[in-house]
Amino acid sequence: MAWQVRGSPEHFDILRAGQVMAQVRWSIGGVHNQLNALAAIAAAEHVGVDPAVAADALGLFQNVRRRMEVRGTVARPGGAITVYDDFAHHPTAIATTVDGLRRQIRPGERILALFEPRSNTMKLGTMKSQLPESLAQADLAFCHSGGLDWDAREALSPMGARATVCASIPELVQSVVTQARPGDHLLCMSNGGFGGIHALLLQALSR
Image (cartoon, rainbow, N blue to C red; front, side, top):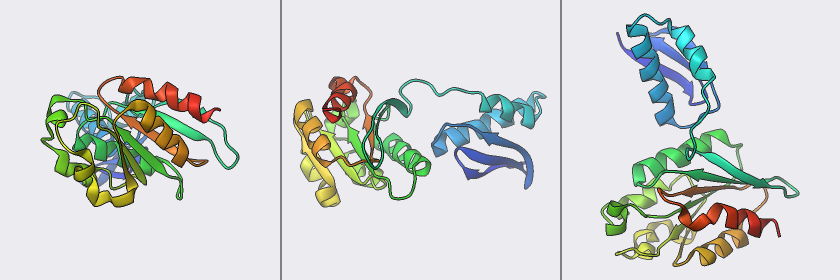
C-alpha cells in the first residue's frame, strides 16, 4: 500500500492508502528529512511497530550537528540576525536546505545563503550551471570563490545583483555584514570549516 506525507516538514501526517496513520511534530526542517521520516515509519510498521509509536519517537529526535545548526544569534532592534551552519555542498542539497529554511521562517524574513564550493566535483565546476536554480529561494547569495577552476561570477550571473562572489573569507564576511538586516537568516553551507566564517560573522555583527 502506498505511503504518503501531508503537511509541512515540521508538522505532517503520515498516510497509508489515504488513511492517516500517524502525525509527526518535530523541529527538523527540510522535505528530505520529512521523506526520511516517512521511510522510517513505513519500515518500522513492516516489523510490527505501530506508526503512531514510531512518530512519537521521531518527535523526540534531536537534529544532528551541521544540519541547519544554529551557531548563534545577534540581537538587533527589529529582529535578531541568526547564523546557521549546514553541510550542504552540492546544488541539490543546497536547494533542499534553503527551501527547508524558507519553510521555517516567517514571511518577509530574508535568507542570505553563503556557500563554499569545496568538494572535488564543485571545485571542477561539474554542477556549476545548477547553482542559480538551487539558490532560487535565497534572497541573496554569497559565494567564496577561492580555489575554484571556474568563473563563479559567470556561473551565478543569472541571479544578477542577488549574487556576490568573494575571493577571500574576510571579503565575504564584510560583504555579508554590510548587507545584513535585522531579522535576517545567514545560512552558511560547506562540507568543510568554511574558514571559521560562523564565528567571524557573529563577531563582526556584534560590533
